[in-house]
Image (cartoon, rainbow, N blue to C red; front, side, top):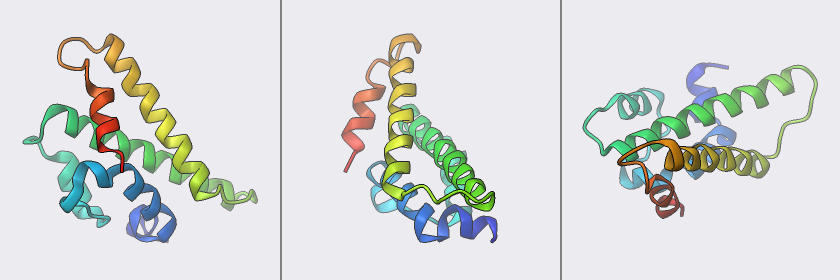
Amino acid sequence: ETRDHLFFECSYSTSIWEHLIQGILRSEFTNIWSDVMLLIMEGQSDQKRLFCIRYAFQACIHAVWRARNKVRHGENLVPVQSLKKFIEKGIRNRLSLLKSKGGKGWEDILQYWFATRM
């Protein structure tokens, strides 16, 4: 296993990453690690878009890593659909907190996220 394979070349993690980010990136979508790094380090994007990309990246990496570790320690692989729902709910919860406590400019972050869902 390499970093590039685990994030995001294997079909399991690619499916999750695509589910989370395809609606935001559209034609820019990639599952190539170096290209993903360029996207999350980019400073030119709209603030809401960039936050959603970065937060989805963090949530996906964390969840895939945990799922991988569970398998390595003898547990069953979490079904990809279940993991997608779990991550999506976590992102929505975080964005909801930003909406209520984030201050000026973050009031419509949750609407932005919902608008990107495909």
